Image (cartoon, rainbow, N blue to C red):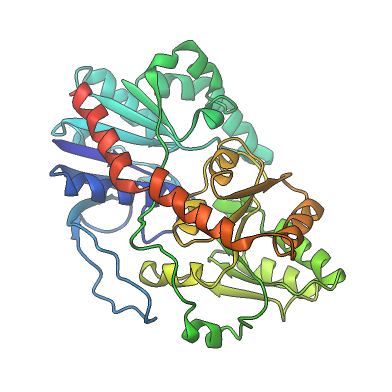
Length: 395
C-alpha cells in the first residue's frame, strides 16, 4: 500500500506530532508498505536513512530507521508550525490512502479540498490536540475550531484520537457525539528497545555536575512559543517551594527554543541555579540516556494544548514513573505509571514530588509498573499493526 502522512512538523524539529508520524511511518515500512511523509521545509525530497552519527554516551543506541521518503514542501506562507502548501493537492493523487495529522493550519483545508475531488481515496485524520492561544491568535483558533474544523474532520473516512477521555473533552467533542462510529481510539506508542532502564551515564553526570545521590526530576519538551503550554514555569515554582522546605531535589530540563533564556532567568531569580540544569537540544541518538538520568518525569502542562504526552511513554519505557497535569488524555496515560496533580498549581506539584521521594513510597514498585505499561500497552509494533488493519478495511 502507498500511504501519505501529512504533518506540520517533523524531525529534526522536536514535537510530539512529528515523532508520532516518524515512528508510525517506520513501523508501516517494516510491514512492507511504501510511506511518504509530506511536511513543510526548505529541502528537496530525499531518502532518510539510519543516522551515521556515533552515540556520545556508551549506553546510547542509534535510531534504527528503515528507509522512508520525506517530501519537504516549500511553503508559500509560514508562521510557526502553520504553513500554506498549495502544491500538496497535486502530490496526493498517486497514493492509495492519505493520513492527515491535525491541526495543520494552512494545509488541512487543502487536504479537504483534495478529498472532495477524490471521494474514493480514503482519508484518515488523527486529531492530536486542541489549539489554545491568547489575544488575536486565541480568537483565530476559536473561529477555526467553530467554522473550519467541522468541515475538515467531516471530510475524513476515519477519525483517530489517542483516547476517548481526550476527545470527549476536546473541541471536537460535538463532532464525536454526532458520529461516534467514525472515530477510533488508538494510543500512540514508544520504542521499548530504544528506551529502557539502564545505568546512569557517568559522562552525563559529570557533564552537568549532577549528584547521583540526590533525587532527580526530569522534564523533556520544547521551549519555543509553540510549546508555551508545557508549564515549565510551574515546575520551577514547585522546585522553589521544595527548596524553601529544605528538600534536596535536582532537576534536568531537556529542550530548546526561544523561551529557554527566559526560563533560565526565572530559575536564577528563584535561586535555583545550583539545582536546575538546562541541557539544550539533545540528539535523538542520545535522548534515551537523558531519561536514565531521572528518577521521576514531570509533565506540568497547563491546558489542553497537551492531549497525550509522548514523553510519558518514553519515561515509562525507561522505567521512569511520572507526575503529570490532570488534563483529559494526559491523565489516562499518566495513571498507567504515575500520578496526576492539578494543572497550573505549583504547590500541588511540589507536594506530589515530595510525596514521591518520601520514605514511605515504594519507588521500585512504581518503576516496575511504568516499564510494564510500556511493554504491555504502548509498544509501537502492535499499535501500528492495528492501524494497518484499519487502513486495509478502507482501501
